[in-house]
Image 1 (tube, rainbow, N blue to C red):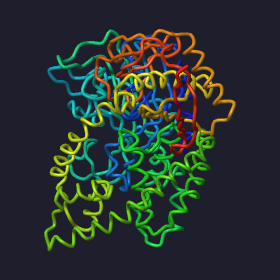
Image 2: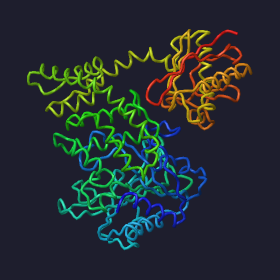
Image 3: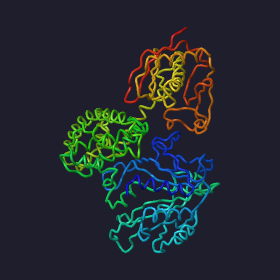
Image 4: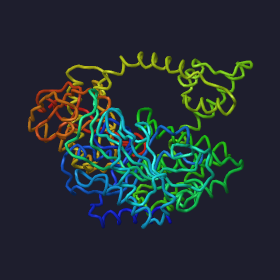
Length: 583
């Protein structure tokens, strides 16, 4: 059974059981600073799990594009993925354990045809915070699951929470018996021997955890997650996700192109290429910060392993075409975004090739100096990073491949000192890109807010600031846009900004909680960099942004706004340079 067939069966099953089908949220979370990417289907639903009413009702189902970065180094083995799809169904104060378990059992056995004897389940064994989950265990017995296929585990295995605080509760997990021999007489779902594979997790959210401990939620929720790639692998009788139709075409092409046969490298290239394409399609771009750095790392790692396979890097375009064709039925947005995906990955490849060649030469020089010592110091790692731009994770990979260890603790200490030295100089830059503060730069700073608002009217509401820099002579403003601005668009921007200046709009300042600011509609860049209490600047009814300030009191102080130049800044990002002229 193909992955898309499993998805369709899942959504239709729960739709027939009264669930509304909701769309997948983007991989890049909207207004959620707690994570870099969407990591689970429940993540966009947290407000509703806490009691807010969902417009689609109390029963929901859908598929969610997810990306988790904690296993990047493990990709290359037979099971780890960074990007994956999670199928889910949710009860928001509606049904609870018995009905959830009955539906799960029915879907697995009736819709997917999994024999009952192939299933084992785990439930929470209880502790001082929550009693033993006999309700879930009895619900499983009522489906016909035999008692010797039901296991009780503690919080490490059968308790779910996203992060350190938030909605949480005991869960029940379902496991598929692959038929492999047991590793011992005590072999059970908690083993990593490969006999049992987890396929579904139903979380019974009735608690909220904060620094003071656990309290009961005002409603009991169910949150479930079924990994699509893993289920497709098992139902197709494949050994790994890379053997399914989701990866098979690109894996086959890599095998054709390779000059050296390394299965781990083929998997890394295939997995990281798919993940990178999905991130870029949802608006991500490579950078040296946060999610941009994760994307950069994925692209760089796949390039390194293409080199290990001795595959020409100009084949990237072909590999992207294959993935678009393979995945477009499931993710049609890839067709629309194919060219931007290509340009971003190829541009990043071109940058990294130069860094990689120089860095690998310097790495070899450094290990030649070790004279048999098998530990590479943190100072060497930092030197390769600071002097040659060579990423520490690449140094670590090269070290392992050559039989060396790396003192990453020393590197991290040196890196922290480096960050501290840089911090003072960067603090004022973060305040909207001001290099210095005086009457002129304050005017330019206010003008960036007006330009940002104007772009949303002329280019579209999805136009967002990507960076700015201000001096006494001009302002520079970067924004996402997929085309060169026309003369008409530039004139419209100028006219709008000048009209708002002419209206002498008041500029007001307000301090509030960060979450409240986002809920009020305030726009921001790099939300994770802001403290819990933020400053919001509002300009009439035109603009509302989180910002460190400072600003003029009234737009009438700005003079006349004039665009001097519009150009490309990077792939998918345009740059405007503008000046203010005294009237």
